[in-house]
Structures are given as structure tokens and as C-alpha cells.
Length: 482
Image (cartoon, rainbow, N blue to C red; front, top):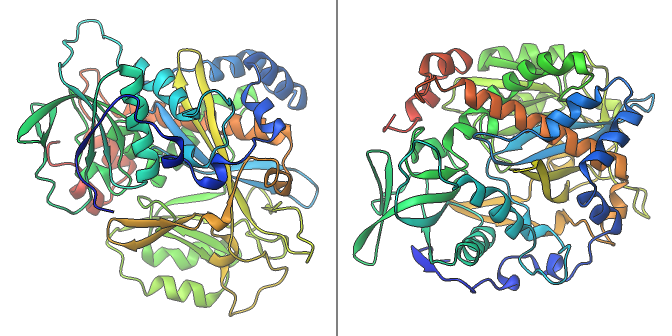
């Protein structure tokens, strides 16, 4: 596709351009539809009934939380269990530029733009409300992107409809010249049709090292701002610390963000020792990668040796306990969790899946937007040997990197929340509620970290960030304007 800067006009949204065909023609599963329309009070009452140690007033406060920076996110969760039947939705990560709308069956037959519209109306529009004591910029609305054209073009079309004005859609790729975009005095300008356009606000879908192209302080309103990436939405290192800090705050109320056991600030030479401590099975992550890149599942010595031979620019890693089959999962301080997986196929195969739940901050708290699932390429084996390929059994991300700044998607492994796919996941309403609570908690943790990383004058606290994430390669990458 020839990506180019262009104007998107109102009344240009066409559903077939912004949904996968299998989603456009699907009927949402009644239970998922019921979950997405559950009132806050019913969610709280049900969750506290099943978790009697949870403080009801605190949970209500959590669901009412209004984010300051991390306005929109999408958590990836694993449905896991222990041998004793202790089921748990485990947060793998929470993304600051999540995909999902194109994979979501419509909830309302009369609204063809679906959850695209909900995000723009509930969250993006709210972000643009006038602020007391702040002179707002006059200019255009924009959509800047480096991936996922199907969804970002949908956002641009819905923005044009909601605000009744043309929207400037701008490709902005990592590592390219990008002379068509500049920042002056904190204001973003885009060159198109022989003139520089002032941008009053942009919706940002930049996934590849976005801190190299956007500043941490901007007069042009940006959703999500770059701080949301560095504080955890595109930084697994700081996210792990944000979860740990917030867990300390909410522990007394019976709440907890559930994650794999995580060891952070690990140098490459230390990795084999931590893998050994976790029983020989672990997950190694480059903290700043996404779309399935930079994640290495280790179940045998060959896979560890292969990883150790890689030449990686970053100096710090995180190591996590691996959730696999019961016979070969990591043994961590929380015990041994393993994948629940899909309902067995007629052949008896069970596949690993994860769940993507997208939420956004609204006037009425953090609300769910859409949800879908992904399965691994190969079934989960009961036993492993030295030649086993763990990623094919455990990796669920659908993105395929075809070339630099060119991506495809393996939609054969996409599992919709429709009448056909949802039943295969083996999920119930309580699992969906648990996934939602975990997503909200992780979103708040990252937003609180965002807040802590600015001082009272709105300046980025570089020393604090360095103490949390002292990786020179990353620090050198952060936007030159800062």
C-alpha cells in the first residue's frame, strides 16, 4: 500500500474498509454482549460476592477512576489455572496503542462504526474539552500512524463524523525521513498540499519506538501521549514496577494485579541464572518491543542458547515465569500456573489463547470497548524435548513483520467474540469480569506512573525515570525535543 498524507472527509466511513470480513459478517455472542452492557453496580456486586475479601467501596472507586494520561489501552490476558483449580486471569501486558475494533462484531445493528465511535465520543472528544487557564490551539485534527491502516483509517473517518470536519491522516514511520512533520514550541505541524497545517490535536497510533518521533511535552493534544508508552504502555520494565507499586496501595482492599513472577533490570549475562531459578522454563522480554517482537519463550537449553547468541542493542531485560502446560510451566513464588486453553478439538488438541480487552477512560470511569482472542499456531504438547519449539505453542500475536514498517496479520488464528468462536475459549461471564477488573487495575497503575513522572510544573522527571529504567540505549532514543 502506498501510504500518503491525505484528508479524510465526514461521511466517508465504510464498514467493509475497517473491519475484517469475518468480523463484519459475525453475530456477537449473547454473553459477550451482556458483559459489555453490564452496569457498574452489577459488576461490583458480582465480583465482591465471588471475592468476599474485596472492599466494595474501593472497587467502586477503581471503576470510577478517570485517567489523566493513559486514556486508552488494551490488555493481553492469559486464562490460567493451578492443579487445585485456582483459576486466574493473568495480565501479560497493557498496550498504549492497541488494535481490536476491526476484530469486533457489531453490538448494534444500527451503528456500523461500532466501538470506533465509542472511543472517539467517550474519550477523544472528552480529552479536547477546554482547560481552565490554558490557551487552546486553533488548528486541525489529525491521525498519525505507523501500522494497522484498516483501523487507523476507521478512526480518522469517525473523527471526521463526530467533529464534522476534515481530518488529516498522516503516516509517520520509525526510521524514515518524516520531513512532513515538525514540532515548534511544542506545536505539531504537518506539511500537506503545499502548506504547513497546525495540529490542535492528534490521535496517535505509533507503535514502533514512538518516543523517537513525539515529544514528552506537547501543546498539541495527543492521545495517548508518549508518557503513556514510557510509563508502561510500551515499556514492560516500568510497567512491572508500576504494577508492583499499585499492588502495594490496593493490597489492603483485597485487590491485586495478577502477573507472572517478574524479575526486572536483568543484564543479558544474568539471564541464564534467572531461567535456572525458574526451573528452566521462562519468558525473556526486550521491554520496549511490541507486536510479538522481542518476546522469547524458553523451555529448553537450545532455546536459551539461541537467545544468548542474539545481538541486541538494549542492555536491560525482564525475565518472567512461563505459563505453559502443567508438566512444563515455571514454578514461581505464586505456585505453578498453566494455560486453561481452548476446549479440545475433535482430535483432542488444546490450543493456548490470550484475550485482548480494550478499555478507555470516560466521564463515568474506565469502560470496556471491545474484546477478541488469539490462539497459538500449534497445539499445547503434554511433554517437551530438546527439539520442541515453544513459540509455536505459546505465541499468540497475529502481527507478521514482512519488511521494515510493513506488517501483515495471520487472521486464521483470530478468535472472535461471536457465536462460533467464543464457545471454543471455555470462558464464562465471571472470567470476562475478572479480565475487565485486571485490565482496569493495570491501566490505573500505568496512569499513576505517568503522573509521578511529571513534576508540579509539568516537566518530565528525567532522574526519576532513569532510576526506574536505566538503559542508556533507551534514554538516548527519547525524543530530541526533550
